[in-house]
Length: 440
Image (cartoon, rainbow, N blue to C red; front, side, top):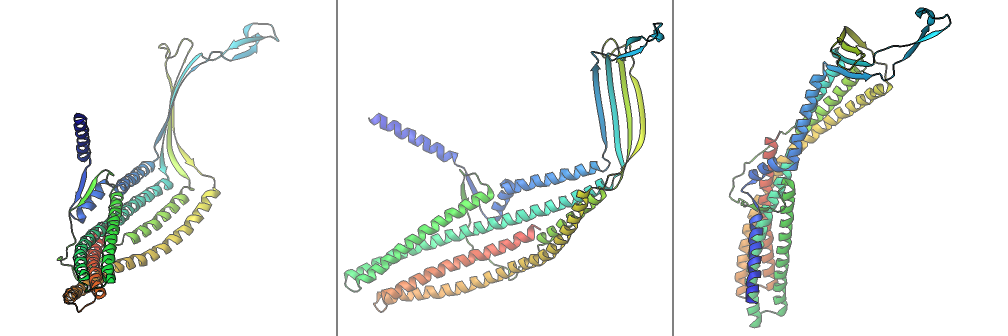
């Protein structure tokens, strides 16, 4: 039995070691490190690269489409198993008048090779397509920047939420230890008959509430890590480690602002793209002029294909082709729709300009608000700490009630949590402005 037990322990330990070694870790030391990781590994960034590549290929296709050079080539080998029969008057073959002679015509083996090159000399529709693809390239690039900026802001929000929650957990754990000390003091006073059972119950309830709050914070922290995992496309079996803390001693600039115009520029390009599509549709209804040629080789034989005793007969021509399209009601209606959509896009562009300016201003105001909130919460915290220290001293000498002591205790906890939240909000606000000043 002992040997079996040792074997089971050995197998368990072996699998535990293998599992631990198989689980990878991803470590981040600051916000820049995680943004760089997302830029290289997130599905959003990879999709943006593919969209830009697609837009580039569309532009390349439009460049080659300007001249619309094409060669139609065909090659055929025909075996006439049954040749056509023609009935000729018999007189032509010294026969009786009124009679006919069956004559088989044609060649059993026919080989054909034809080449028909064509190139457009005048095609305004294809020229306008090149303009559309260039605008689409620029629009795709700006849309990718907007996507990157939005992703970076979401990652920064999750990152500083994690730092804030970890700080709140640390504060709550410290206060939970203080709660144990407070419970011990009240319990001793209860044993001595100094305080009531109700006072002891209130302190116990306060500790239970703190324990529940700590559990809730830990759950929220796990959810934030899960969100960060999804945003950055970190492998699900990887453990995320953040070696960073809220910096209470960091120096913040008194004023920060951004002039990010990505949204407005994107709206202008959308209007330009619709206008380019309108030009393309209108020009596609105009005549086109093309230069074309033709060269063909044919070999006829009664023996076999590729008969060495037969020559390939060549025929050629060159010419100019004018293609005049018939008026298309669908294209006419499409032009009308594009004119309306262009006007709508221009109106939206003006609205987006105002929204863009408001967003930039709001980020500055949020930053100033965060600075003010941090200063306020710090001053309040200092006073709450002083109040709690005095409350403990007064309680120990019996001149302060238990409920007033608990009020001072909870006020201090709330102030500590608000101060840490204000610090995280300020760092996030600063980071958001820097992201908008970098990705533009």
